[in-house]
Image (cartoon, rainbow, N blue to C red; front, top):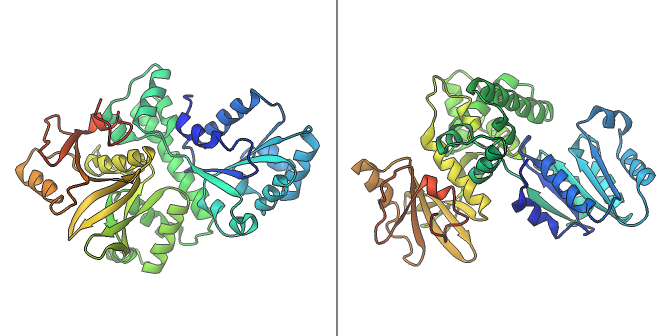
Length: 398
């Protein structure tokens, strides 16, 4: 497995800190691998390391309570600073008490989990800011390419547009194998991480709503509009229920709800969000007859890549014209418009006109899958395949 240096570099400065290190992200995005790579680095200077994987039944049969965690660590550590790694620790009730206790007993604690509840409620109350969090995401294209090369393969931009960046899917060779793995992963996420965890009784209705959301990525929706659509299809649910279910998908890191910023109102719009999938594969496995939604997947991938590059990303309402992204970092602002192609005049005019009235001091960027350079004196056009190789919007495409 490739070394995910971007994430490890963010964590490295906290190895010996008494802050609890929380590593989160959607299931099977590579959290455990990052945890192992952190352990490998620490082993170069210390063997006072304890690792517990709470998805391993041999572990959970012996450790059932938070006190059991503390006892196990105390019985197996040596003197000095002990590095404690707890993988998927949320399976243990009151696990936050174990973290709090170990922190006070000269332990550097690292935990992983696939639910943002790790960062809310009792945990934050118990620790009152004595933690630092890191979110891991599925592979971006540079990581996909690196891991594929390690496996003796190559992956095209189109393959990435369809099947995304869940690491293990790269280990399979045929479309049927990839689809079977991703379908099983999707079912595990929906059933284990949501239906069972939140004890959803209307599981059929929830599955329908979740599928609708995941196949409708890179679109603006409100809970009411989704509820109204479901009712038209004979699936009764209220907007309050839909909003609750959306929050569950977000808490499991399956989707991101991206805020919309209004230039006219000079504030964020609270009634609706744009929803992006953590990985475009969650859209593609729901498509029939290979009619993949490359247009919205491309926009979704640009969103995921911008986050990886370190940008703060919002959707920008430019006086009624939507600009897909306002990307901000290091006091620089970039208006980013995304389209699969602007070869047709109508599409070209629509995408370019979205920039009208934006601040001349900020950069305007158009990203498409076209090979022709559509740059103008005011707008820089970046080919999608070049964008995937970039480290940031201020860099020239390689």
